[in-house]
Image 1 (cartoon, helix red, strand yellow):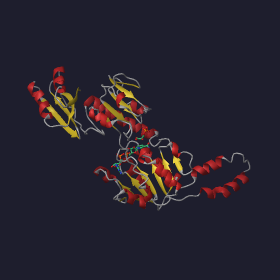
Image 2 (image 1 turned 90 degrees about the vertical axis):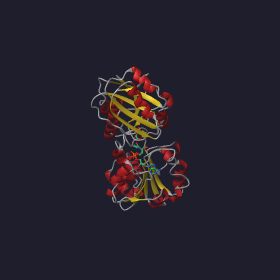
Image 3 (image 1 turned 180 degrees about the vertical axis):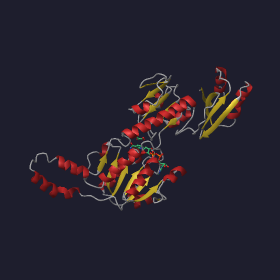
Image 4 (image 1 turned 120 degrees about the vertical axis):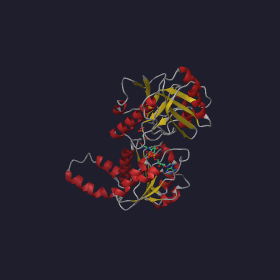
Length: 389
Ligand SMILES: NC(=O)c1ccc[n+]([C@@H]2O[C@H](COP(=O)([O-])OP(=O)(O)OC[C@H]3O[C@@H](n4cnc5c(N)ncnc54)[C@H](O)[C@@H]3O)[C@@H](O)[C@H]2O)c1
Ligand SMILES: O=C(O)[C@H](O)COP(=O)(O)O
């Protein structure tokens, strides 16, 4: 039985994708085979030596010690795009909430409970409504920073709302570029995007290079009265810079899914408790994708949507499979193949792929792998782990 250690609330629909005859799922295991998590802050010291993989049912992996996992030969998976629509729809809400006095107007109406006369209520409503007036999205410039799975949907939504969309993504993949509508104008740098936009929405991962991407030095590039939306990660925006910009009316509103103590209690903030991916559809989709990827890896060694391992898939036709992870250094393949040759073992098919410091191999052989062969492979310097599947 494979033991899956679960953290966070994971959709039951997703968990049901684990074949129940071969998988046990629990929130405590002494020797788990894999972990399935969402935003749980995972520390290296919690990772058991038995762990073979970690799947994040979601996009952001900044809660996982990915570099540590790579050093220890553990692939980390995520589920690109599975919650993108959910975030896009919440960004739509934030665009509207930062444009119109909706939240304050709802509070105002809630405060009218003492009035029982309809005429009196009508007259008060008509007298006060001008306090909650706002602006429309149509015709405004919408700057989208990060044009991946979420940013591309958000940018497309902006176009459909009649906005003029500008985008900035210095790391844009070719595949992501193909998905973008051609009406999106690409900006050469962040200051240009900030200076052109009435609304700016951030859709990029939290990395050391993106921490405080919006900071005290570049916040001056925003248009006066612009709105900033952050549904990526709190650390991407320097809180003190946003507060200063709001105080000086440089920014008129800040909407974020990542509240911080300093942000509370202001009318120019729309704060939400990290609910971007909290829809039934996104939770199901993320969990289903994460579980399928784990099953493929645990049972067949195939890798899809890993953030630190190469993508690799070998059809399972016949023979016996061995999966080997090794350091990406010279002569490894030769040393491994010599182990098979020395034992007269026929290799039917094999795939080898590397990514940065890691190389990963799937080797299908004609006869069952003996414990002696597996130990010999493990004994090669630079081999990180060996599994017989
Ligand atoms: N609020 C939520 O609940 C919620 C839900 C899902 C994702 N997220 C956050 O959104 C992020 C993006 O998710 P995604 O699915 O679109 O990921 P993605 O990987 O598909 O897209 C991220 C994009 O950011 C770009 N990028 C990287 N560095 C950049 C930089 N310095 N400037 C501009 N662009 C840069 C990348 O090239 C990529 O195109 C996640 O990493 C996560 O932190 C939040
Ligand atoms: O990166 C993500 O996918 C989101 O931040 C969602 O996080 P959650 O799974 O904890 O809701």
